[in-house]
Image (cartoon, rainbow over all chains, first blue to last red; front, top):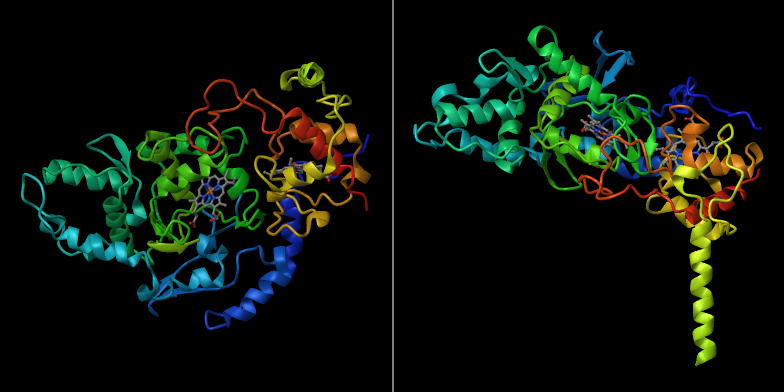
Length: 309
Length: 156
C-alpha cells in the first residue's frame, strides 16, 4: 500500500506557498507595459500566484491599505490582504483613477437618487443626512448591531429602514441595482478608512453564527469558504486566482457580469459553485456571514466600489 | 428482419446486464481507502477519462496539474500534480481516490465523485436551487473507471 505522499497537516498549498514565497515575482508598478506582464504571466504560470507587491492609491490621494496584520479573532491568518492584490495589473489599474472605474457610474446614479424626494413623507436621503460625505465612516462599521431593532443590520437593511419608516417609500429589493448603487455611494465616501466592525456584545451571537457558516462544507462538492479562501488563497482553482475572500472592496464591479455586485450576490455565487442550495440575499444566514467575513478584514481600507474580474 | 430484431434485443439485454453489475455508490467497499473491484464491470477507456479530467463535473485540472494534458489551459494547483500518480498508487487505490478521496485523506478538500449521501444543502447542479429527488453521483461508475484508466497511464 503506497503511503499517502501528503497528509492533511502539511497541506500541499501551504508547502507550495512557502516555496513560492521565495520566488515571488515583483511586478512593476502601474506604469509597466502590459505586454511584458502578459508574457511574464505565461512564463511564470503558477509562480505568480501569491498576492503581488503593488500598492493602491486612488486618484493620487486616497491611500488604500491592502495588506495589514490580521485581527486577533482571525485564527489562521497572520496577514490579511484585499482581493485587489490578487488581481492582474490590468484589472488593478481600473481602480487607480475614478474616471477609469466603471463602478463609479453606479455611484453617480445613486447621487441623483440621494437628492430625490420619494414616498409619502416627500423626503430625500439628503433632507435628513445632508451631503453624502456626511456618511463617511458608516460603511466601515457595517454590519452593525441596531439596539432599537434588536438585530444586526447590513447597510442595505439600514437603507431600506430609512426608506420605509422615514420616507414612507417602498423598500428596494435587497440586491436591486438601485440598492447596490446606493451602497456603492456610501462606500465611496468611506474609502481609505479602516474596516472596523464590532463583533462583541450583542453582535456576538450573530458573529458566531456567521463563523459556523464560514466553516461549513456545503453542497455536493463539500467546500467551505475556508477551503478556498483560508487554506488556498494564492493558489489557482482552474483560471481563478483565489484571494482571501475579503469584503472591504464591495460593492465590486465585475468585468465578468459588467455590473456592481453586492456582498450577498458574491456569497450566493460562491455557495452555488459548491453545487449547493444557497441562502437568499438578505437572509439572516447571509447577514451573519457578512458580519463574520467583514470582521476578518478589520484593518483593511474600505475600497468599494472596487473592480474585480 | 427477424435477425436484426434479435440482435437489438441482445444489445438491450447486455446494456441492462452491465448496469445491473454496476456497484451502487452506497455499496462500494473501501479497504484503507482502496477499492479492488471495478465499479462498472467494464474496463475503463483512458481517452474518455482524459476528457473527464477537463470537462464537466470531473474537472480534475481545476485543482491538479497534469503534464500529459498540458494542451489544456489553466490547470489549478489546489491539489498536488498528478504526474507519476500510477507510480505512487495502485489501480485499486486510484479507484478509491476518485470515488471518495476522503477515505484516503481524512478531511481532504477533494470532492467525492462516487458518493450520494451525507451532503449539507445539496443543490440541483450549479443552479443554487435544492436538489430534486436523489443526489446523483458526480461521475457514473463507468466514468470513474475511465478516469482511473487514464490515471494509470501517468507514469514517470
